[in-house]
Length: 298
Length: 72
Image 1 (cartoon, each protein chain N blue to C red):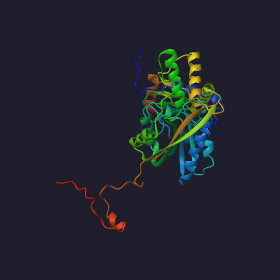
Image 2: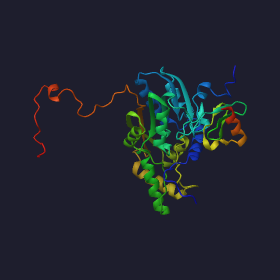
Image 3: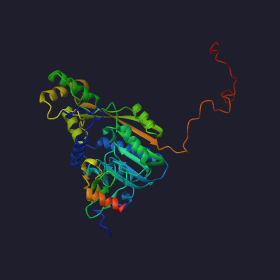
Image 4: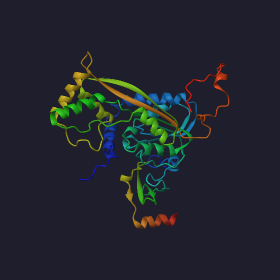
């Protein structure tokens, strides 16, 4: 048996199968992707800037591209995805980008990068294919996504099968992501978190929707084959007991993190070095400077 | 008029590199493949869509590698 590689959490061929299946569902599970695409388009609309050449990383059949078509700053948008069924222009993996350095003014990505094994590596490559002062704008599912389902499945499995395996893919949180952007050499990184809630008749309805989205578990360590029916039934019971509203429908939470960051450029604003001030704060406030009295004793 | 349905957009072709080595690619229009001499791989182009995945690429034969080296 091969030793599992701790840095390979996700299984790209499994993800590609899930996305191909989602493409066949023709948008039936797209409501989260549409909401997130709208948010990206809104953010981009507020940035008064021209982006002659742009890349859409995770095109999903042009879902975000249709939202962006009303903006006049983008002249040429290349649509890429991990599967042909979703790719208008080319197929790629975000961890091995096939583009020359400095060739894009903008890289957008709608809910794909949370599936990346080597996210720091992918971010570094995205920075490299951007021109100086180019913009990276992306949405990813964050750490609070599907916590209810995760808990219910783990508890049900522990109760019935005396063990637990990863059921819902792990996600990063907003603070981790801002740090990763900085380490990848981006300037002015911002990570913002939005929470969306959906209701379903039961946990089976939620899981059916996740399949339509192509967002079911694609971790390497996931359990192969079918989960026992009794385990799923118990998980649905636990879910309903804890997260059902007055109408009996269950609630599912999704966290979407929107990232904006710029490829560094000399003209960008930078924080001043400490001690480089040329005027006194006391003068600016028109007051007298007083010692706080907490001077260290020699 | 070029056959736009089965040919790569020239604006895309000019910025594509090998995903593995980031080296240059040469486009074989008759076989619908993008060849990376450095990686020794041929990436398929299906219906005008380049499939830039290392696990879908074909390994080049020694003759093909020599032919590519001769052209460079």
